[in-house]
Every structure is written in structure tokens, then in C-alpha cells.
Amino acid sequence: MSAEEEGAVGRFFEELDPVVFAFGAILTVTVIVAFFIDPGYVAGGIETVHDAVIEYLNWALLVIVFLIVVFLLFLILGPWGKIKMGDEDPEYSFFSFFAMLYSAGFAAGVVFWGPTEALFYYDTPSPLFDVSGGSSEAMSIAVQQTLFHWALPQLAVFTIMGIAIGYFAYNYENVPLRVSSALTPLLGRENLDGPAAKIIDILAVFATIGGVATSLGFIGSQFVTGMDFQFGIDLGNTGILLVVTTMTLLFTISMVLGVDRGIRRLSNFNMVLFVALMLATFVAGPTLFLILLGTQATGGMVSDFVSMSLFTGAGEEGGTGWMNTWTVFYWAWALSWSPFAGLFIARISKGRTVREVAFTGIVATSAATIPWFTFVGGTAVWAQHNGVADFGAVLAGDAGAEVSGFILFEALEFSVLGLSIPIGTLLIFAFMILVTTFFITSADSSTLAVSMMTTGGKAKPSNINRVFWGLILGMTAAILMILGGEHGVGALQQAAIITGAPFAFVCFLAMVSLIKNFSANRGRVLLQDETVLIGSGRDRRDEPAASAEPGDD
Image (cartoon, rainbow, N blue to C red; front, side, top):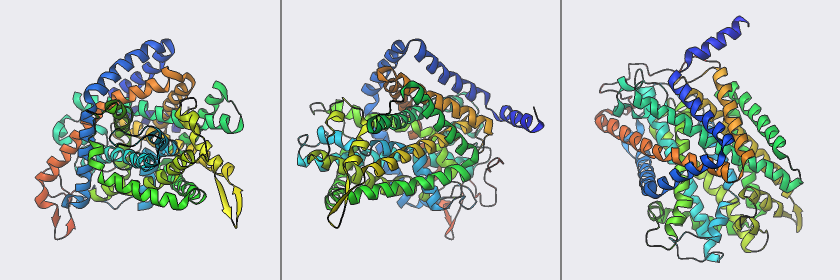
């Protein structure tokens, strides 16, 4: 072994937080092994706990997520928004910052559910609205419900964690960049290496692996199923391993290149292709209808936001079951992502104000999400309603949700001077490329976050650490896809919900920590119109903020 290799290995062991790394790795590997030994027993246990969480904590998730959205809107509009995270200039341009935030923690799900979700609400609308499934009235309600699920609340739980972690890490001395740091005022800086903080960080690793691997399993299955559906290529288990191995290799390369050379460039590419595919669907689809539909659905989401946020289904036939199946599931799944997404947001937010991060996290991203679900989801609903495409097999459960995009894009044509030009094949290839690149971006950013969690908050962990967790994540996603069925993705989704539910309370406490700190220092947020860093009761302008570890990015 060369001196350089010995140095890399030495850095790997030196930087580890042994407790968080060991328990996080052991928990993850134990779940993988247990699924192989007796998937039925493990799935049954997970389902029992999942049902209890859904039954007794569903209301808490709805209330907490709603309060977080309200608080972030206050940060955008109120005086606390001027507080800065660190005393340096932002590391990335606003477009790159936005593209990384959107691609890393969110857009993979947006791409997967874009052509599909509104179809389910069109077929079975929320009991909150008195409309019949499959009717003309259900079309607008279906898109409105989709926008509600994807525009503000899911992004809010990522953003609140990002602001809390970044603010305390960059504005206080001896506060590391890790998930437990979001609760610094409640835990105390002297207890950030204590048992409570370790438990939070261990759960964060496990939640990230479970939640992200399930999502990557979805995206990978979309690619594999698309190959079979569109081209008749059945990859089988060997092909699945090959596809996931290739994707794992690609995201590992991107991750090793670092945030600037890897994740940033790929995220910028993702956003360009994302917008191009969205606009192509808008032009090839029912353009005028989509404008009208989007206007009405967006207005409905705004006017009905409070009632949709706090709808528990009480007194409505089938209401609670519908709410648990959709809204509570989405909130819990997003919460299982909140440790990773929040840590990554904190990593790229140094030097920005609280207002900038909050605005980008829930407003700018919503501005990209609303047109996507309106154009793509609205076109799918229009196509089903008017017989242009047939999604009956998806709605009946005979085909997976992952084939909806291929059915939709195959049916689209582009008219020029009265000539119809089929562009379905081109759009399908663009869709598959987008699926793959978002898979890579989500995987490398989540792996970076797990590496940071297991090194005590290092902003730039060693390559060995990144590669190790990259392989674990890729392996877990491959196993989910191969196992399939009720003991595969479904069981791990339930596990993600089980782990995500406790993070509702972590996110709530992170919000409380920010309120406690900001309110205690509200009289000194501004001094002669200059942004002031506030810390533990004294002006921090003359003190250096916590700096990142040197690395190879």
C-alpha cells in the first residue's frame, strides 16, 4: 500500500464517529440480512408498527407539517429572514443553489409521480371534495390535490431542518454540521456528543438509508419496467443488478468529484432537461386547457390550503383511510428524508440568509413543481378523460405506476402546419435520461449526507467513506427491486414511515429551537441595516463562523 493510500485509509478511520457509523451500518445491514432470511416475518412486524403509527400519530404529522409551512412563510416575510448563516459570501450562484436543492432532495419523486398521481385522484377524489370520480369536475380537483402534496409541505420539512442545522453550525463555535445540531438550544452545546444527540444521528442514518433506498428503488424500477414496457426487454434479476450497479458507479463518480464538480453540474443539467421535457409536454398536449386547468388548480390549492392540510377524514366515509393512504404517507415519507435533505441543504447554504433558504426551499421549488404537475399530470388526466391514452391498467392495479409516463409520452404528437409528428419515442428517451440523472443526483447527495452524519459533521468526508455508503445505498436499492412484491418496496416504505414519524417531532423541535434563538436575539438582528450574525447572546460579526474541513472539492 502506497503512502497516499495509507493516508486515505488513515483519514477514513480518523474522521469516523464510531458510535453513529457502527450503529447506522449495523441497523442497515441487519435489515438487509433479515429480509433475506425471513422476509415474511420482518414485513409482518414492520406492518404492525406501521399501522399503529398511522392510527395514532396521523393527526400529529398533519399539524406539525402545517405549522412548519406557516413558520417558513413568516421567515420569508418577517424580520428574522435577514439573519445570515455564517459570515462568508454564498459558495454557489442562486441557480446552482436552487438546482442542487431541488434535484438532490425532491425531484426524483416529482419525475416518478408526475404522470401518475393526478390520475389516482381523478379516479378516486379526496372525500374532502364532493365530486365524483372520473367526472369533468374531478380533473381540476385531481391536479389541485397533487399540487398540494408536492408544492409546499414536503419541501417545508427539508427546509426547516436545513435552516436549523446550518444556522447553528455556521453561527456558533464548536457546533458540528450534523442532524442533532438542529436542536442545539434544547440539547445544549455541551451535550451534542451526548446520548440524546447520538440517538438522533443514528436514527437519521437509518431513516436516510431506508427512505432514499426505497425512492431509488422506485426510480430504478421505472427504468427497468420502462425497458420492458416500451421495448420488450425483460432485464430479469441479473439485468436489475447490472442497471443498479451502473447507476451506483455513476453516482459514486459524481460524488467523489465533489459538490462543485459533480453534484452542481449534474443538477444544472437535470433542470435544463426537466424544463425541456415539461415544455414539450405542454406544447404537444392540450395547451390552452392546461393553462386554464393550472390556473384553477393553483387557485384552489391556495384557497383550500388550510382545510387540505388539516383534513383528517373524520365524519367522511372512507376519509381517514384516504388521508392515511395519501397525505399522511407523503408527509411521513418526506420526514424520513428530512435528515439527509436538511443536512445537504445546510451544506450548500453557507453564507445565505434565512430568507433566501426559506424562499428557495418552498417558493422557488414550488414554482418549478406546479408547472410540471400541471402540464404532465394534467395532460395524463386529459388523455384518460378523453380516451387519448388508456391508463386503466394502472388505475386497476394491473400495471405499476411506473409505466404511466411511457403510456403518456407515447400518445403525444406535435402538430406543425397541419402535420402530426409523433414525438413519443423522443420524449420517452428524454424521460428515461431524466429518471437516470435524478437517480444519480439524489443518490450522490444522500450518500454525501450519510457520510457527513457518520463523521461527526465533516463537510467533506473522505472518498472511502463516501464510496462505502454509496455501495450500501446501491445494494439496498437493488435488493428492494429484486425482492419486489409485498415483502420488498412496500415493506421498506412502511419502514421509512415508521422512522419518518419520529422525525416529525425532531423537525418540530428544530422549529422551536429557531424560534427560541431568534426571539431571544430579535432586538439585535439588524444594526444600521447591516445583517448581523447572532449567537449565544452577543454580536458575532467579529468572530469567525464555523468553517468546513479542508477537502478535495
